Amino acid sequence: MTTRDDILKNLTDTLDVIQPKAEVLSTPIVVDDEQLIADAQTDYEYARMRMKKLIETSDEVISNLNAIATDAEHPRAYEVLGNLIKQSADMTQQLLDLQKQRKNLIKDEKSKGQSNTTNNAIFVGTTTELQKFLSNQNQQP
Image 1 (cartoon, one colour):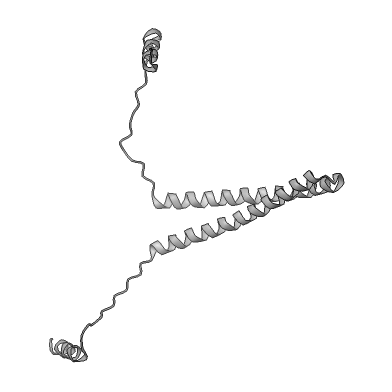
Image 2 (cartoon, helix red, strand yellow):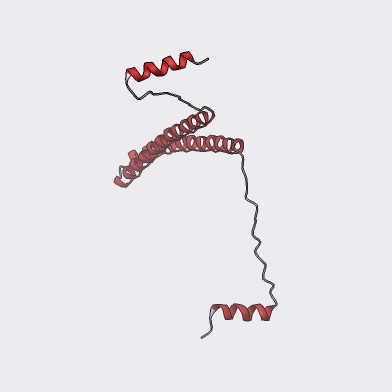
């Protein structure tokens, strides 16, 4: 039985095909944080613009389809109209979700720059031990 590898080898030998060698990149691609933030902002603006255009287009189609469904009085026309209205409402919800995600990203970016360091010293012991400790601290220069 001839295997796939045998067939490929025979074809390569017969046709004098040179097999390209795969090159492996050894250096990792490094993207800085500023570029990631800029890309995220660009993607957000693009997605928002596209969603708004889709919502506007669906509003126009809903108006036209409403007129057609009213004239035809066919159940299928009303079913399609109902589905389109639902999809338009879903797109509006997705636009709000996009806004929420962007707000969370901005909040995360701001929180990265801030560091909250809380240094609390807690004394565990009796009040007598605390008084002795404080008096020793006051006596040392």
